[in-house]
Length: 275
Image (cartoon, rainbow, N blue to C red):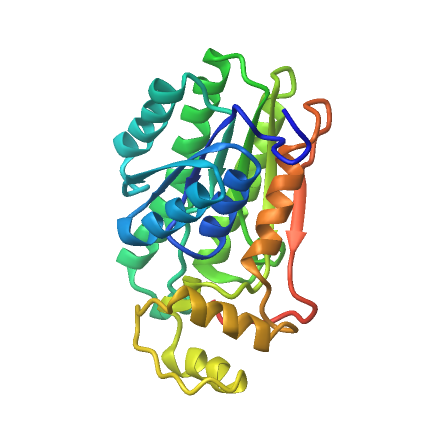
């Protein structure tokens, strides 16, 4: 293992790796020498990330899966272990938000958030720990939460992220005698496609503030290059996904006797959103 490739020989899984924070984490893990398994629902976007990792001399595999399906989560982990013989890093990043007041919310949207943000993460944690124990790994579980979990009035989405924080703390306590560490990362507002389900007027207003003459429709994904430009033009309000990825790399490259519990990564100015 070299200083330039501190994760050489390790296997990592990143959920929600199609774009944004997940893509950035996957690329940084690959650059650090890990064999990365990217999972999400959009194969073409993950293929771009895979090519980037391979162009930098790394290894990556794309597995299309729906994190809400328990068997698909478990199958993803089994595939990585069967192929490489081990699992060292599990990044539970997949998540989404449907902003709405409780009295105006759609219960099916609540179900999607709960199954993605909580159930999928829980199953990922459990299956990953079992795999890490089997191969005697000095492993790391990284759960991507949100600064929304730091307030008690952030709606159903915030409730799911409160759940992530509780799951992370509970699992960390369970694993104190294991060589597996749990890190909870809470990003603030980051320039990603996370806001694709937000009110269009709000999203278009942010784009106009950045001097970008773009109109987006509900659910539309912005190209990677557009998001990079947006972040550069709104650094005070929107953080860079790479900054979250660097925090993850910091956590997973610490000696196993160092327990990095919680990390908050946010831009200089807080953006208060209606959840």
